[in-house]
Image (cartoon, rainbow, N blue to C red):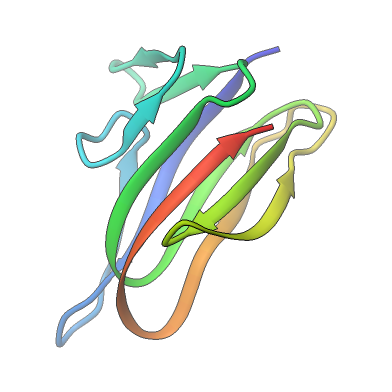
Length: 114
Protein backbone atom coordinates (compact mmCIF):
# COMPACT_ATOMS: atom_id res chain seq x y z
CA UNK A 1 0.00 0.00 0.00
CA UNK A 2 1.89 3.03 -1.25
CA UNK A 3 0.87 6.58 -0.57
CA UNK A 4 1.34 8.94 -3.46
CA UNK A 5 1.68 12.69 -3.27
CA UNK A 6 0.30 13.79 -6.59
CA UNK A 7 0.30 17.58 -6.67
CA UNK A 8 0.94 20.43 -4.34
CA UNK A 9 -1.02 23.67 -4.70
CA UNK A 10 0.40 26.89 -3.32
CA UNK A 11 -1.28 30.25 -3.05
CA UNK A 12 1.65 32.62 -3.33
CA UNK A 13 2.09 36.00 -1.74
CA UNK A 14 2.58 39.29 -3.53
CA UNK A 15 0.54 42.21 -4.72
CA UNK A 16 -1.36 39.87 -7.00
CA UNK A 17 -1.71 36.45 -5.37
CA UNK A 18 -1.82 33.58 -7.80
CA UNK A 19 -2.27 29.87 -7.40
CA UNK A 20 0.41 27.49 -8.63
CA UNK A 21 0.44 23.71 -8.81
CA UNK A 22 3.74 21.91 -8.40
CA UNK A 23 4.65 18.26 -8.73
CA UNK A 24 5.48 16.40 -5.53
CA UNK A 25 9.01 16.05 -6.96
CA UNK A 26 9.49 19.87 -6.97
CA UNK A 27 12.90 20.88 -5.60
CA UNK A 28 11.38 23.04 -2.83
CA UNK A 29 9.75 20.00 -1.20
CA UNK A 30 12.20 18.00 0.91
CA UNK A 31 11.64 14.41 2.02
CA UNK A 32 13.10 12.42 4.88
CA UNK A 33 12.85 8.65 4.95
CA UNK A 34 12.35 6.07 2.23
CA UNK A 35 10.57 7.57 -0.75
CA UNK A 36 10.23 6.70 -4.41
CA UNK A 37 10.18 9.71 -6.73
CA UNK A 38 8.66 9.38 -10.18
CA UNK A 39 9.89 12.40 -12.13
CA UNK A 40 7.93 11.36 -15.23
CA UNK A 41 4.54 11.96 -13.57
CA UNK A 42 5.69 14.13 -10.65
CA UNK A 43 4.53 11.77 -7.91
CA UNK A 44 6.25 10.58 -4.74
CA UNK A 45 5.32 7.31 -3.02
CA UNK A 46 6.12 6.08 0.49
CA UNK A 47 4.78 3.75 3.17
CA UNK A 48 7.16 3.93 6.14
CA UNK A 49 6.04 5.46 9.46
CA UNK A 50 8.05 8.58 10.21
CA UNK A 51 8.56 9.45 6.54
CA UNK A 52 7.99 13.15 6.14
CA UNK A 53 8.01 16.07 3.79
CA UNK A 54 8.78 19.63 4.67
CA UNK A 55 8.84 22.90 2.83
CA UNK A 56 8.80 26.62 3.51
CA UNK A 57 5.96 28.72 2.14
CA UNK A 58 5.44 32.45 1.87
CA UNK A 59 1.80 32.67 0.99
CA UNK A 60 -1.78 32.18 2.13
CA UNK A 61 -2.47 28.48 1.57
CA UNK A 62 -0.90 25.10 0.99
CA UNK A 63 -2.96 22.20 -0.34
CA UNK A 64 -1.79 18.69 -1.07
CA UNK A 65 -3.33 15.74 -2.86
CA UNK A 66 -2.81 12.38 -1.15
CA UNK A 67 -3.80 8.89 -2.17
CA UNK A 68 -3.78 6.43 0.70
CA UNK A 69 -5.60 3.53 2.28
CA UNK A 70 -6.78 4.92 5.61
CA UNK A 71 -3.29 6.12 6.52
CA UNK A 72 -2.74 8.91 9.02
CA UNK A 73 -0.45 11.91 8.89
CA UNK A 74 0.49 14.64 11.36
CA UNK A 75 0.54 18.24 10.11
CA UNK A 76 3.02 20.61 11.77
CA UNK A 77 3.26 24.33 11.08
CA UNK A 78 6.43 26.02 12.37
CA UNK A 79 7.12 22.88 14.41
CA UNK A 80 3.74 22.85 16.19
CA UNK A 81 1.22 20.05 15.77
CA UNK A 82 -1.89 21.44 14.03
CA UNK A 83 -3.99 18.43 13.08
CA UNK A 84 -4.10 14.79 12.04
CA UNK A 85 -5.12 13.76 8.52
CA UNK A 86 -6.63 10.42 7.57
CA UNK A 87 -6.75 9.34 3.94
CA UNK A 88 -9.70 7.58 2.35
CA UNK A 89 -9.61 3.81 2.96
CA UNK A 90 -10.35 2.95 -0.69
CA UNK A 91 -7.28 4.63 -2.21
CA UNK A 92 -9.07 7.54 -3.86
CA UNK A 93 -7.00 10.72 -4.18
CA UNK A 94 -8.11 13.54 -1.88
CA UNK A 95 -7.04 17.16 -1.48
CA UNK A 96 -6.13 18.32 2.02
CA UNK A 97 -5.46 21.85 3.25
CA UNK A 98 -2.32 21.88 5.39
CA UNK A 99 -2.16 25.64 5.86
CA UNK A 100 -4.52 28.54 5.21
CA UNK A 101 -4.42 32.19 6.29
CA UNK A 102 -6.23 35.39 5.35
CA UNK A 103 -2.88 37.15 4.81
CA UNK A 104 0.44 36.03 3.39
CA UNK A 105 2.75 34.46 5.97
CA UNK A 106 6.08 32.69 5.90
CA UNK A 107 5.74 29.27 7.51
CA UNK A 108 7.49 25.90 7.62
CA UNK A 109 5.10 23.06 6.76
CA UNK A 110 5.72 19.44 7.71
CA UNK A 111 3.68 16.33 6.97
CA UNK A 112 4.68 13.18 8.89
CA UNK A 113 3.35 9.68 8.22
CA UNK A 114 2.14 7.99 11.41
